[in-house]
Length: 293
Image (cartoon, rainbow, N blue to C red; front, side, top):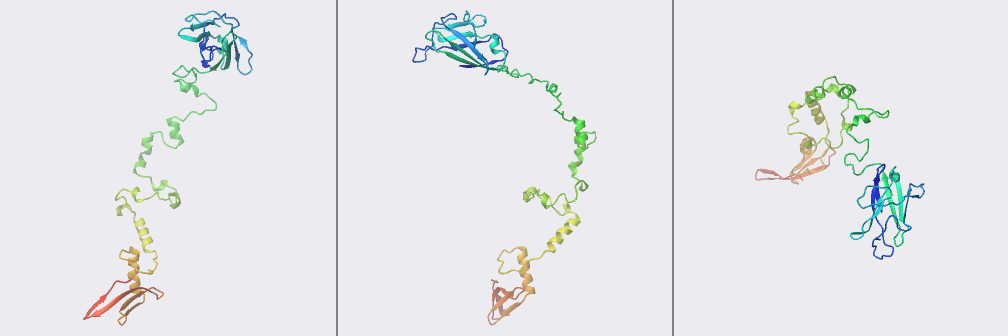
């Protein structure tokens, strides 16, 4: 059996079960007493301790603690169960203690392991640990510990005046001044991919009033100054704005052949290659042109 006891405890008593060596069912041995012939108890403390006798003494089931006290609890109701009073020496210091009850005729030797611990498992407040209490400030006196800054120290560390943080940070509510941002601090490399999406902006957040004049000019210059590639075929019924603009441009600028004999109208690219052809007809004074394809 194994039991946990707090180191330094006094007048400790444990209940033990002694098995009948003749039983095939594990029944308890009854009728033993402190003075039963050859019955002895020894204990050993730690890995280097030697076997030391705990002299058994007379005891009653409900009697006051007495070192070595040994008595049967109830042969009728708890056969095989005995009370054993430990000496204070056995549990004086934390560690493992091994006990052995043996020697009496008809009993199976009983090994007992005590785990003597430095904490009190029955102390619901702090488990008997002296450092766990309400006075946490008393634990700060250590050369390896630096106490956190108080309010004033924190403000000084971050360069704030003596007023409270709400007052100091109030200007941020109206935006961060441009002068507070380092040159080129916000660029493409500083913005994660996908960080700016349509869902990130409130409806109407970007309108003409929200754009500075130079920003609008730069946008216009960027859009107006870019180039577009020529089309290589029909952009379809739903072209992009770039495709629609390029088709109109190519039809006006590039070579165009209208052949009444063949009944075709052709639009070329800048190199002279036909990219689109439409059929044409002139009947009874009505000129018709089909879709380019």
